[in-house]
Length: 382
Ligand SMILES: Cc1ncc(COP(=O)(O)O)c(C=O)c1O
Image (cartoon, rainbow, N blue to C red; front, side, top):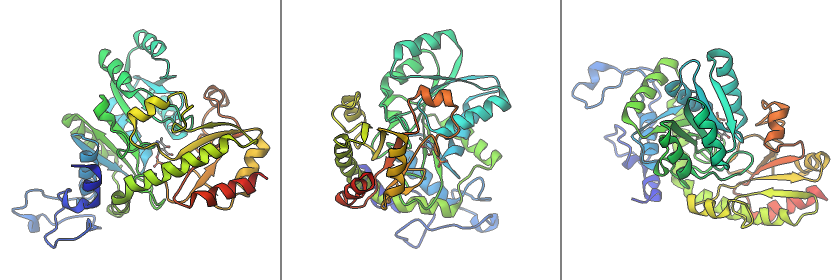
């Protein structure tokens, strides 16, 4: 079945208990369930922190969409990452992470270093020979990367990284927040986990913070579910419902946003105030061919380097259609200076290492008319 068909009628494919034929997943907004009234039912619910029919329904859809063995939905994307680390690492373990990563991942790993002596080695996964050398010199339990990376918009070869991870017996997780399962399925390239923030494209309307962790191994699914309950990371039924509302339109939104982002990227490339545009849909992007092979849709996020910090600030300040907001993938367009918002927790040295400066702006292209957005940018930079 095509993804579009699964997502268009999710209530049909998610095993939600419903004998009324609801046309969308019902919200079970309840903390507890009466065991006596569920006698004879195949699945028994008792407490919403551990299981809830609305959240379970969304988990079933994500697991199918990512071709996994199961999924756990969490109250935000960062808690899905925290669950991943809890499920795969013990105190003192080492993890290999792509250096161009979300600032919240970097912050979480700093906390885990402080608390549990988890050692993170940040590397450039474009250079797999160097990565392999580093692997042979250490004892790494987990590899984590994003592709596209946020905010550098690098495309990493997921199949090659999965093969390397397998060769050395290391678990491999892909943060799929940007591409989403509408564009790429990490498990199909050999990854063990797909972890993603559903705050972004997946829910699509900026109405909720939420996350998900899909695993290909049933015993890992069980472990993650146990930990989610033990640590209280579960997504609320109402949040699961809000996420579900974005699903039927996800591939369609992403395709329209991709077309708009490509036009905006091409326009920005010719603008005198712009030094560099990083968008994997541009034919001169260094990993353009890989991007086309690995993703069905290029997510509508682009990163620019402007001629100066003043120009970057002018762009943000003077646009009317782009809020100065963190996050991406929503119906509204937005901009941010990553070093000030999403990546503010990076050290100065690590910001420099990934080429992020105060004149770097990240743009998330929404569903507004493309020419209106280009006019707005033109006026803002005049
Ligand atoms: C790539 C990536 N992963 C994870 C997260 C964390 O998600 P959330 O903000 O839903 O906690 C973000 C947030 O921006 C992100 O960009």
